[in-house]
Length: 314
Ligand code: RIB
Ligand code: CA
Image (cartoon, rainbow, N blue to C red; front, side, top):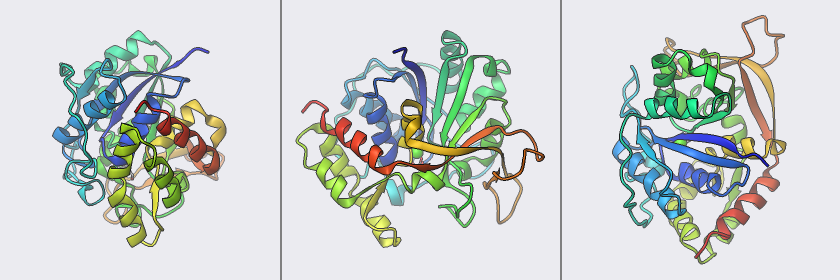
């Protein structure tokens, strides 16, 4: 089986970390590059977390590049109330001693894309600043990148930063608009599907009870999130937001969605950061530039992710 070359750009918080730990072990994927962008927490924290999670998974060989420390225009937005000030919910984790990769994320992404012409899949699970920087700086990027797979947006429900916008898109709406208009096919795993792709308390506890470093980290890192979702009335769940675009690459059979024209609102007062998804027309309102994921097989996801986490070495 030919592995899919994948670059992951992340604002490494708790669900990002859980997604990375899956990505490193999915046999269908080859993670060829990582980059950290500011989002959930500051760039200093997301960069350190990305390096530390890669090291925890035994993947210090994958270079981790620093990306943008702030969005293009809007004021930086953080989610420390979800992920903690460090981004990993205060979990204990050894720090990586891998040498720090030199250069900007968007430059490294472009160089990597040229090594995998027409094959590289870019996964972006934070604000889209780094990917948009690559799109703007390198007009020929679409010749090399096969697709961009994001956790972000919401097609038909409310946002999680306000009534209309999801955190990653709201984190840099202008960059997000650029990515959707880039001409590179986008797959959008928005809140419509990522809220469904969750672990319940018992499933988290079953993972947490396994005696290995990865499960110990997950146990510590998810405590605050479980309590927060309960407080929000969603139940004690851990939404696998950022795992969805990664799992969809390896197991598209777990997901279903629709082709749609998606545009990002960049000037609205109440609607800034809204992903305006034309799910129902016949494309009169512009090209169908996006596959919007809307549903998933939660049981299949839980089975696979539990198996992957619990089979990491002690
Ligand atoms: O809205 C959820 C998204 O925002 C996830 O990527 C989470 O990590 C945060 O970045
Ligand atoms: Ca994220």
